[in-house]
Amino acid sequence: MNDNIRYKAIIIGGSAGSFTVVSKILSKMNPDFPIPVIVCMHRLKHVRSGLVEGLNLKSNIKVIEPNDKEKIVGNRIYLAPSNYHLFIEFDNTIHLSTEETFNHSRPAIDHAFSSAAYAYRDKVLGIILTGANRDGANGMKEIHFKNGTTIVQDPESCDIDTMPKAALNLFEPDYILTPDKITEYLNQLSV
Amino acid sequence: MTVKVENITEIKGFLQELKEYSSYDLCEYSDSSIYRRIKKILKDHKLSLDQLIAKTKTDSLFIENIIQEITVNTTEFFRDPEVWRELYQNFYPTLRNKKYINIWHAGCSSGQEVYSNLILLNELDLLDKSNVIATDLNSKVLKVAKSGKYDKKENQEYFENFNAVLNREGNGSDILFEKYFEDGVNSNCVEVKSFLRKQSDFQQHDLVKEEMNNHAKFDIIFCRNVLIYFNSALQTKILKQFHNKLTNGGILVLGNHEGLNGFFKTKFIKDGPVFIKNNTFHFQF
Ligand SMILES: C[S@@+](CC[C@H](N)C(=O)[O-])C[C@H]1O[C@@H](n2cnc3c(N)ncnc32)[C@H](O)[C@@H]1O
Image (cartoon, rainbow over all chains, first blue to last red; front, side, top):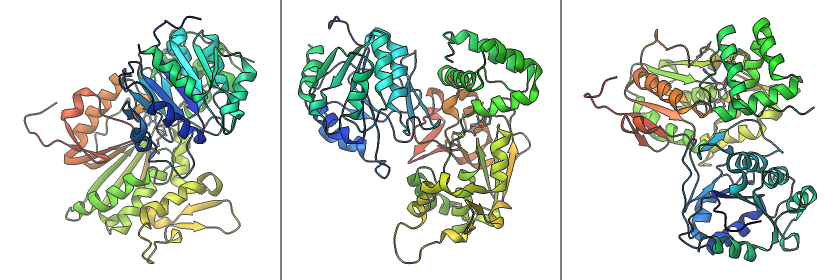
């Protein structure tokens, strides 16, 4: 494991309840953090909008809901828009799709993670947070087996630990960290 | 059975054969989504890519089925209610003085988008002067669209959008669902009332291969969540067609997270959720 590799992107997944954790992480991140961060969160059925505004209030780095074919650039947080799946393309752009729900979800974290695994291979850091279902575990595994780096939120620190535990059942991640330690890990990447 | 197709160029080979042996040209669909769809088809049909290609060359019925599986047909009534609110409150009222309103839904899937629009037009008393044409590549979804019959369960949450668009004020004069849909008490489906169905013209049409030549210019073109499946070159080609087919000041309604690619940014003005054709005369294709 080599922490000095420059990641091309960081991808974070969590279910609806992970909003607090994500905003906490974003609120403590270095404002000129150079690496793009892609966030894929499930949304509660009736709360389809307002998430990006909510995150922007907390975040030190600009959070946007990308358009289809949008180029991924550094010092930006990309939030998967509601009702679309988000995929990363080989040319470092975002692809959105309305295809059928996966793991009962759209966006599905597994789709986002596995596309990142293919597009970035060892140059991606995948982080899975608190969550009440299994979506994301398989995608994390793909990142792991394509030699990307993986962080699973410490189940002890989770409101609902189904998601992290599902991941831990499939592979051994590089790190198991609390949200604070995750932020610390990220910030040391930018120095 | 796990199917391994590691190579996108092999998929391209299939698309080439498909183009040769059928009327369908998917060569310029966006790589990764085509790749995913075809991987899924191979898995669902338990076929190797070679077998898929062989069948494509000999079995035209099979091709029709494959096309239906490759295209992504998900749709909703009043998808993105806030967009329809905008059209209803701000844009459509400006069409009052027009003699006719020509509207094209390109990639209409099973028709929910079209009926949503017809409902708004009716509420604004614009239905009688509207000519609505709705097209899609996929003949199977068009059949559903024409029938106007929708599964209650599958569309359940989307009927809620109906209220989000039409009944938000809560001023007591709610527009009733029953005004537009027959709701068989014991049946699992709702049916769009015939006065709306009569106003719609569903036709099979391939955006990639045919232009809408025999048609007057359009005041509104809907093309929502269709171009995201095409690569940039094909998007540009289709956008150019739309630009040509719009009246000056006509509007293009794309999906919520679709933008215009570079060249067209100056040819349209973005106004809320719609793109208005830019009225500059020095510009000609
Ligand atoms: C995701 S649906 C969008 C439905 C609707 N416009 C909406 O936003 O809810 C995409 C539709 O585009 C159609 N489509 C794909 N390729 C096409 C082509 N070359 N010409 C016409 N329609 C096409 C598909 O069959 C599918 O029904």
